[in-house]
Length: 472
Image (cartoon, rainbow, N blue to C red):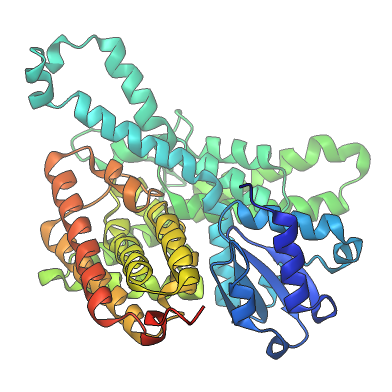
């Protein structure tokens, strides 16, 4: 039977109270309501509504977890059927500004990097497929070798695998300009100029055997391309968009079309190549070194710490900070060990949901637990985290954190690292296809983490009240 989104919306309004709602908006998985008094809302009644996977109050908002896709349709049904709610729509930007500066900064980073994730994810898959296609053992099985593969195929593979990282600064500048209200194409052009083929390639300069050296300006400033330089592109993009907005306010209308883009591009490219680029590249190199140092602390301690902290970061929304760090690692080293150490959170969290769902006698919990577990396997963790794991107390949360930490430690000890990001849980093995050892070990530890979390939750962490059939 088709889901009645209009009915879901009406039931939410009835229980929460129309006059209790000050504003309404939504994110990827949650309906967010700013309410006059959260104590007037019966959480248990809300959770019994079809498709609702949990509720919680955070950042001044009553948040109802519905899941990806569902939340959009429920939100639209509420806005469409009651015109008074159109006056209560709260812009997400306004909500973000009400949080503390650190959280705002993390959200800004997320808003810039999330739009470019699909391109990097696709590139990671291409890298994995290329590694399999050019693997000597695979080619030997088919009675051929790399020497027999036509050159044009090798070149086409290179186009698929290398282009995004070669022009990564242009994508970041484009996204930053778009985020801060500049003209995205201006940002894109500035990013392209930062990696112009007329400049010494950054990767070649870094290779001491290449013979490529920087161009020296004014006798002491090294000029190179900024291929893979995330921080430089990010700062240039933010500053450039703000400069454009200032110039458009003061530039005469007759000159705006020509001279605003000219001025922004001219100033930001020179500042990027001569001042910010050299300085920020030094900072970026140091950041990568520190992160790698943490990740590779002996005996898996780094993986243990990261595996423990990442779920806590998700709870507070600070996990978006990881996106910039992962992009920096990928651009600088070609690998992403950070997402590997964070990945066991998804396996452990899904297992907690399935264990509670299977053992529970509560029909509603069974449905919500299974749905949240499946959603977590597909990469959306909030329904599982807030709707099941945190909702049912310290024990499920502790088991999830324990298994995530131990899984991270094991992966660190075994030296496992992804070649992309953005693929979670059941899709994440695709990031390790580039090497049989990496793929097999990653899958093995992921399955072990899932099984361990499931068994511990099933035996020790299912609340007694869920074992009573009468409790619905």
